[in-house]
Length: 349
Image (tube, rainbow, N blue to C red):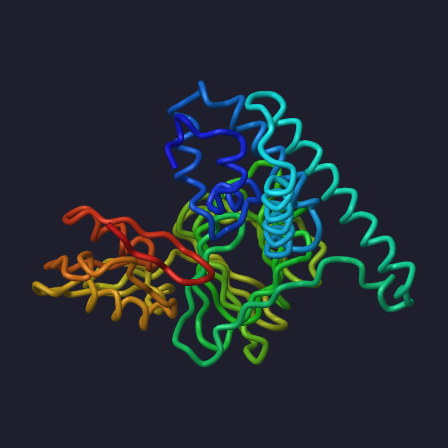
C-alpha cells in the first residue's frame, strides 16, 4: 500500500493500521507515528480512517475481540459492495463507510443488550469488570516482556506480575510476587505503581528493581535512574524517596535501611541486578546463533522474518539489562529491525 495515495478504505482495511488505532501492544506503533508525522498532508485521511476503525471496533471486549469485530465489519462491507456495485468515488464512498460503521456499532450494542437480557445472573453482574492479567516466569531463570504501556519488565524465576483490569487505560497498577527489573515508560497522567506484600512503589518514569518473595523476611527496592517513592506495608510514615544508586532494605520487625548500590569490582555494575544482565561474548557468530542465546537467556521467543538476516555476523563483548538493549547494541554494527508481536520478537531487514 502506497501511504501517500491511500484512501480511507485502504487504511481501514490495513491490519497494521487497525492495530495501531486500537493501541495494540503488538502493533508497530512507532512505524505509523513516524509515517504520519512525516506526511502531515495525510492527516484528514488518517483521522477519518482512525475514527472509523474505532467505531467499527465498537470498543467491545479486549483488543483481540475488537480486531475481530473490525474484520467482520470489513468483510460485510466487501459483500455489500459485491451486491450493490461500486458507488461513485469521493464523499459518497466515505458516507458508505460511515453508514457501515454506524450499523456495526449499533449491531454490537443490540447484541450485547440481547445477550445480557437473556443471560444475566448475579455472577455476570458482579464480574462485569475486565479480568486481571497475570504473567508468571515459572521456573525459567528469567522472562522478558513489554507491557501494554511500553514498560520493559524482566521477571526472575518463580515470580509473577498481575496487571490491574484498567492497566494503561485508567491506571498503571501491578502486583508483584518475587523479583523483577523495570524500565518504566513515562506518563504524567498515569503514575506507575507496584504493590508487594512488603511495600508499595510509585514511579513516573524510571529504572529500578524490586525483590519481594513471599517466603523471604527481607524485601529490597533498588533505584538506578529517576525517582521512586516507597511506602512500607503497615507504615503510617510519609513515603521514602529514593535517589539513583540507592537501595532500600526492609526486614520483618526491624527498621528499614537505605544504602548505596553494591558495585561489582570487575564490571563496576550493580550486583543487585547481576541476575538480569547478560554478558555476551561474540566471535564472528551469525545472528541466528546469537538470537538463540538471547532468547534462552531472557526467556522470550525470537523469530526471523527472512533468511538473509540470519546470516549477519558479529563480534564483540557487551552487557545488557534487557533483550531489547542487547539487540539495539547489535544494530549499531549491522543494521536490522525488530519488534514484538504476540510475546515473540520478530527480526527482519
